[in-house]
Length: 137
Image (cartoon, rainbow, N blue to C red; front, side):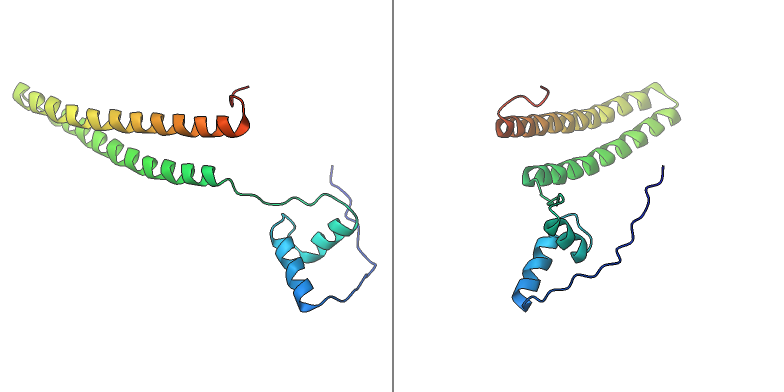
């Protein structure tokens, strides 16, 4: 059901100094309010004002995950090339060479998976310590 829109037809005006105005704008920008009037209305009428926060440990984790994702893409690309090469092999000797090359790529893939697991465990421990309890509870 569509919510009825209430027109705001009353004007309330007051004067502030330049410094006070800058403070109001600064406070408003730290919230989810899109307009200064919305922020002031919420504060004056004691409606909830939601403040934006950043989780720095999550920011660092996301940067690491993006880097790992790019590395996984590279390994996956290499793996696709290796499998494509496998389909073109005609003789047993070529197949033996393919197996040796594939072992190198498999080792790289497993190393990246281990690196991801280790980092995820570190982040889990960090968040668990911040919360004071295991995350899955």
